[in-house]
Length: 52
Image (cartoon, rainbow, N blue to C red; front, side, top):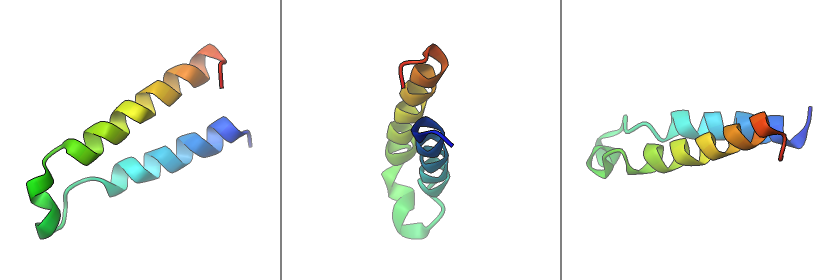
């Protein structure tokens, strides 16, 4: 596995973990998952263009 693939898997797991499912995190809104989604999108584009 390449470093990019491992990074992609870790980012997917972080994105799933950022879903506001617990009572204390419901007030956060979409901030954590939105930020991780943006990072995921950038890494995905870099992987598809071959820059990572």
